[in-house]
Image (cartoon, rainbow, N blue to C red; front, side, top):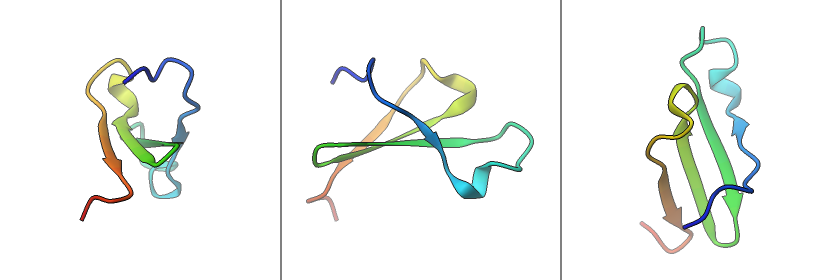
Length: 51
């Protein structure tokens, strides 16, 4: 999955947490989550059908 053009946003709960932030990105039918401290690291991606 190519995420190079994705716009990442920090979650509201992470904004005042001293650098320990979670970022989310919405794609067509997929929600992606990553650690902002490791932007090039692993990404968790879940489809809307996931339960």
